[in-house]
Image (cartoon, rainbow, N blue to C red; front, side, top):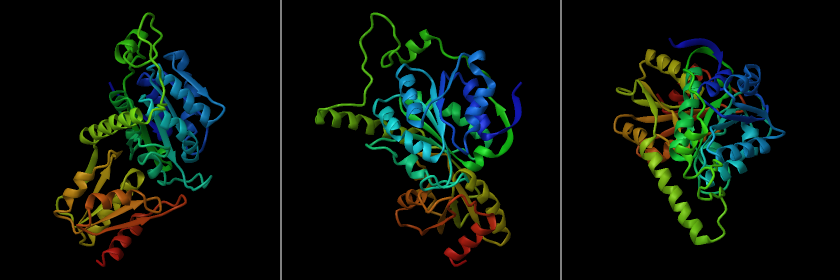
Length: 359
C-alpha cells in the first residue's frame, strides 16, 4: 500500500532521495532549502541504506564531491538556493562537460546578490541557459506541488543517467516550504557494485581490475577535437528536446488568452483562470514542466486559436523570452511579474491580463 504523509516540499526531497536508492548527498545549508539536509541528518540514512550524507565546508566543495561521486557511476546529488547554486556553477559546467549524471536541487530565493530569503523564480536563466560557461544544458524540471518534488527526484535521476547529463529540480521557495499530502515512492535498493559496473562500466571509474583505463575530464586542449565533442553534445541536446518535453494544459481548448507559468505561479494562475472566466474572459494555462527542454511546439500550436499570451513569473521577465521565441511574433506576448520575493495574487494577474490586452 502506498505511504501517504503530510510533508514539507524540502523534506520530501530528502525522503525521496533515500527511497530511490541515492548513494550520496553533499550540500551546504542555505535558506529556503536547509530542511533538505536537516531531514537527511535526522533520518540517518547511512544506518538504513548506506547512503552518504555530508555537509561540505562550502558550496564549491559540495559540487566537486558530486563530481567525484558521479565519476564513479554513483547516484549523487546536492541542493542549494540561488546564491549557492551560483557558487556551484563552475562544478556544474565541469560535470556537464564530462558527461556525468547527477541531480541538483535549486529552491529559488530573491536576488540579485544575497537578496532575500523569500521565494522567487529569478534563477530561470541560471538553470535553463547554462549558468556556467560553455555551450551546455541541464535537464530542468519545475515542480508545482510537494508531490512533484518527490516525483521529480526520481525522474531527475532517471533522465540524468539516460542522457549522462546533470539534471536540476528547479523549485521556488513557496514549493520548498509549503506542506501537502504526498504519496511517497517505495524503497529502491541502492545498486550493487556489480550493477553499477553493468550500467556505467563503459564510462565510469568503478575500480574494477583489468579493465580499460578511463579518464574523466572536461578538458580538451586541441580545438578541433573540442569542437567535435561540442557537436556531440549538441546532438544529445537535440535528442533531449525531441523526446523529453513535458507540460500541462488547463482550459486551453476554448481560451482566447493563455497564461504561461511554472512552479507556484502556475497554481496561482489556476485561481486567476476561475476569476477571469467568471468575468466572461476565456483564459487557459500552459504550465511548462520541463523548462529545458522548453515546450516550444505546444505554445506555438496555441497561436492557431489564442489571441495572446501572458507570461507570469516571480522575476523581472526571464521565461517570457522563450515564450516569445515560441510564438515568433504571430500573436502578442505580454509579461506580468513580481520581484524580490513578492508573490503575486490571482486578482493582480487578472487585472494585468485586462490592462495589457485592453479587455
